[in-house]
Length: 282
Image (cartoon, rainbow, N blue to C red; front, side, top):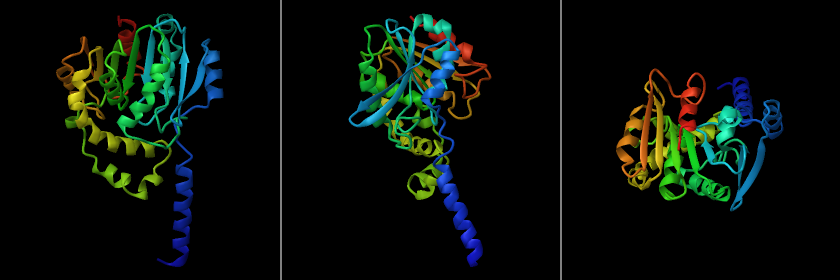
């Protein structure tokens, strides 16, 4: 390659490499979030929890004497994915609500992606620290789904219920996506913008771990609520039917298939459907 085009290409690649790591982090500053919630008439509490040197970032709203909803976002994302729930006045009458930045996202040591088991080991101590003697429900969307399964399987006595929203929990339903392996094992991953790098890395790791959940999923003994769209192009609806078949020891199992709904069911126009499930849990 001639010298000048090579220099131009090198400058472009270096510039993109720097830019890619600083953009599209999919998070909101604490200051801005607190102000936004204040304007909505809701007090937002921010906290950071140390787990063996790892900083887990979390927020919560609501009365500490109420039962708890604990939200876990998908990939990529941050706690802010559930901001509309944390502001909802009906839910606030019934629940205290927590939402976290999963390890590697938001302000939980951004970019430090890790596998499902290690994430669960960091998240659980925080959950254990916020128990208030009232029912505790965990809710997860997409890749937050297998995290819920891991938590509920490892700690079957801790949760009154779990809500899986378009959760990716069946290894046989996962697309191969071999290109993620190419990124995972090479420096090419660093050219992916912002949160998409840790997202791609964890998805590749999770694909291998889902098989391990086949046996563990039978340990789940809480109430289970599964909501899934029948037009989900990212996480096939077969995951919902797998949960129904595999969670044989759940105290109760509730399946809600949303006709015509895609993957992004936690938000409008399907928000009301999810909220109805949360409001009607016993």
